[in-house]
Image 1 (spheres, one colour):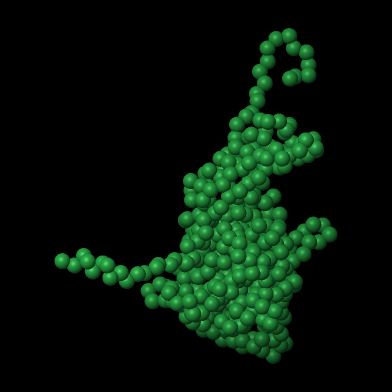
Image 2 (cartoon, one colour):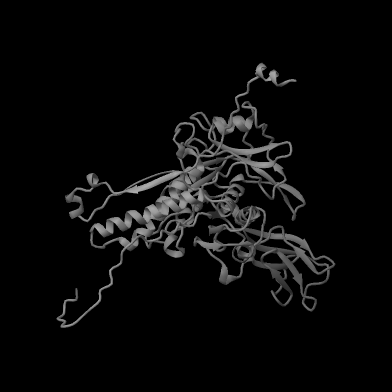
Amino acid sequence: MAANYLHGVETITIEKGPRPITGVKTAVIGLVGTAPMLDVAAADRSLNAPVVVRNPVDAAKYFGTNRTGFTIPAALDAIFDQGNGPICIVVNTIDPANDVTAVTAEAVTFGTDNTLTLAHPQVSAVVVKSSDGLTTHVLDTDYTVNAATGKITRVTTGAIAAGAAVKVDYSWLDPSKVLAADIIGAVDVDGNRSGLQALIGTYNLFGYVAKMIIAPGYCTQDSVAVEMIAVADKLRAMALIDAPIGTTVSEAITGRGPSGTINFNTSNKRAVLCFPHVKRYDTATDTEVLEPLSQRLAGVIAAKDVERGYWWSPSNTEVKGIVGMELPITALINDSTTEANALNEAGIVTLFNSFGSGIRTWGNRSAAFPSNTSPENFINVQRTADIIHESIEYNMLQFIDRPINQALIDTIRESVNGFIRTLIMRGALIDGQCVYDPAKNPVTEIAAGHLTFDIEFMPPTPAERITFESFINIELLKSLQ
């Protein structure tokens, strides 16, 4: 009621009834790595700042083209190869001001087209001198420089003779200067985050967080892998971790134990172990090159989320944009002795390539398996639980600090149950419910402003194994006439 005196009539609006709960975004990939930032317009460059990329056009605009040694453009290409719909939160960790290597007096010669190309692209601080080093030529008067490609063009009206040999001093953006510590990142005294730490708190920027985390090329290091898992724990995400290039099947499986020598010794339910690397065709070099499986798998999961739903397993999905695997993995659907089956049995996601199947993702389980046999070790079950929990939590903001009464209790309970019923209808859940148990809500807790609700649900597990029992029944001979 209004506090002031009123001799008359008033109307007070009372809100009641359940509120719809909106599910959080799931096809969101957090990507940390390096990009050739001299490909990018100065206004669009970023360093240790999360940038949203929704399509290949955004990828090229904010992170340049695919160049040897840089990880972000190749990863974005791999992700978008798998289908439309993924959202990438990308953090570039290479600093054009510091992560450079200096080159002194590189000897090069202008061609008949009045150009030459330096040994490295992504160049800065270019100084062109005569071959004897006595004359320093003038930028934009004698020559121009394409910093992105490292191509120098002779100005025909300048002082450099046609076909001249010259020596060039320059610095080039060197991705090998980026260390594990740069990828892991930190939080400084002013609260600025870098590397993987920059993925934390993006909800306040964009309204969503990464649900898959990848650091291709760097996650093969134990230090990076364990930090990816730590960040995934905070974000309710999955960390997709690759074995190093050159790992054998035996080493991958051994890596799950204490005598292993690779980064697979974890039982965290948020770690997805990926093996082996895959091959793609590189148009720039006209060769097949190796790339991490994790970035393709992240794209597969995101595309599956969009096309089918986050409750679908990423396993048994053909991988697009690749021409082969780092090493052959034996695979037969009805043979438990194959390498693909042995890898899955050790909690490793691998590839399946049998007659007429194409190269497919193969494996439903996180690194929690086989030490944890709960349904949560299924990747899709864990992700479904994460989405339900996070969706409910975010949508409870509208009820926080309201007066506790029966109407509020009923509204919260029915709002959650409405959300669960929707998920059941979509096939994301087999069944579930939200219950208010008075025994868990004594008057002392209610007096302290604390309400407790029980939520139970069961996502569908993937049909990982199908068994047929076959009988030869002579009684069926009776059907002969």
